[in-house]
Length: 420
Image (tube, rainbow, N blue to C red; front, side, top):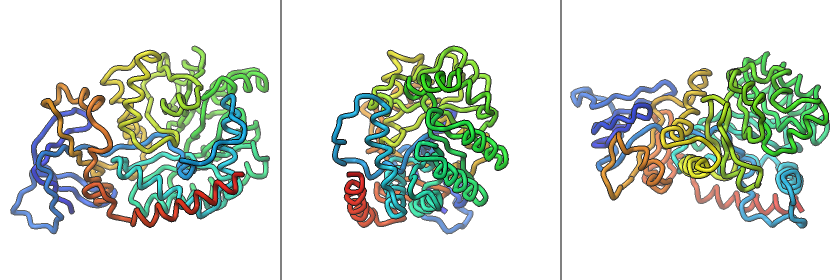
């Protein structure tokens, strides 16, 4: 067990402040004990948290670990002129080149970055069309080696042919037999009728849900109207995608009023990915008419959820109805998604200790201002996942970060050569 001494606890839901010692029990169902009785003798690891803040750790609602080795890679020979060209010349070129070792190190690098940023749970959307078999288990083991919990899916798509789509379905089915996960789909414009129907049937059979990109670019809507004479959310609703409380719709930028009503009236959750949308010049998220089931993600851009929240807030000034409390609510909504759907790995003994030294007082009534304008990942000092210390004094305790990064650089060069 871990004893956090002399810290200031911030309740992640009520934002109440409490100066206390905090005993953290290990395990997926581990509990927290405030101001524990010193007479109770248990074996503990003491950590001095004087002057530090303790609160629930963070979670990422939509990530792409498969892109982890892309940072610094050469630009495509022809500059992409629209979103579809970005996909074809960059990301679909990259995912075709991945092999098992690249996938493993992509997972390790992503999990390490998450942990050091205070993120102990990741919902990930994976793609490796020429290394499908076993890819989800490789990722799962990489995350677990670092100590980060996960909810994975494989990005099933017809873009590389129906045989690879069938492999994606088979990989998903095999993975869901032994682990928690979701049924992943790329997007409506790369998923044909048969594949979509098979994916929904698999989600029903496994008591899972669909994780899919929705109207990230206008071209997704245009394709759907041309092929199916309906808009994207109408198509998904007609095929049963929205019936699952575990379904995640990523992006949702270009929805009309009818689509927004369908989403709000469904069980589905949405994930906002502000920085990725800005990077791809596809538009800005607007929550109007979508309801309250909105989470935040990073879409593979990075692993820093504090940064994601701040970007959502700043962009939202011009494109969304979002204030301090709504930003924080979206930031924390992923915990509600996981809890309400019975997923494990995001219990109350997942904590972050922040060495945040504000220039002005901090308390319940002004916490959200500090959250948006003060907190950053450099403040993350210690991270506890499932009651285990995975980051201590800003250093990983579970793996050798230097050796993993060295190996990742070798694989990144291999990946870039294959992409050429």
